[in-house]
Length: 227
Length: 231
Image 1 (cartoon, chains in turn red, purple):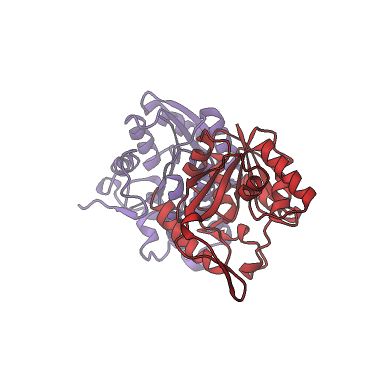
Image 2: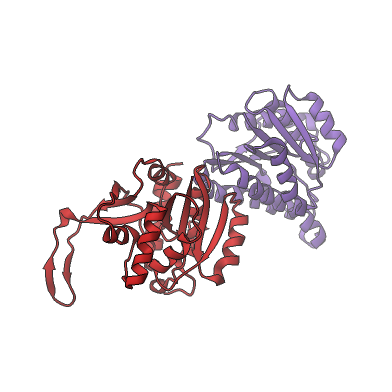
């Protein structure tokens, strides 16, 4: 069995909307519920830990009832950073393995979760090749990166719970900041194998207002038409 | 096989459908929802060799629907098909239509199907299913004097079309049929002087419903299917 942490602590500042993006409606349904409904259908998920700010708990709780969600759902308080939110969610995990996903990525398929869970590797992330050039720089170019060596890191990700918890504790002690968990785990233990599974081009993160428009098209193309 | 929920099975199209569908082998369990227990028991006696349970509810009291559907799921462990057939009419021109009459029509014809679809979807969405709503040609063309009924059936058509897209992700197909003149008690209220033997019979509508809810049919959802008999 595995626990699923669903990060939902974002405030959606780039959406120019008073409501965080994960609670806005996408194809008539709150963004967060697209993912929760899919997690709810996977037998091997023991529970879902939703990391969110206190003020949205009752709204999410109501959604869980409205959508007939049957999995046991726990709530963990969101932290000041994504890293702190993951750490908060991890404190509620009791299973050997944990899967991390974020509510702002509603186009993950049930099959994506399943192949992560069923993988024999303990630590697996979803990633895709980068089809654009990335360079180092601020207002001037300061260095080059080899595109063929880079991977666009997506979610969901699966980890050995103890390994990840331990890496997070080290990061707290050293006050190191990471933007996602494969980087964090790799930084503290490069002997750990973290497998990369190829993701899909439509597993986008809803970040800017235009993503809701694109998201609506993705939903129609990949979910309604597929059905 | 699965469970089929049917409303309005006490007579007319609902009864004919319950009998026909029970004999075709798509579902092995049936939940009949309605207020006339005796009429539904009579329907059960005409149905095929299937497991049937009757749930008493007057659809005026739509607030009871979530609890009833919860009981259906508890009894049968699945809900795979919902046939919203129960209907009500109180044909009046605008100036004679009371708010009470209008609301009663909407409770039975609109609020009940809405709540039944919402509650059944909670259980159906895990493995897909079929929903069929019975609207009416009255919902598509102007019928002076039938204000509440015609507008309520227009709502059923719109709800069906909306939910066809919304529920596609769950592999739930939503069908809508609009029968024309059909020899039912409801039709008698709308056209008291009409000879019922000269118009379409409930069994003929039931035959179409039966074809639509065949698990192999996937092509006719999302459209308002008019059923008319040409004489």
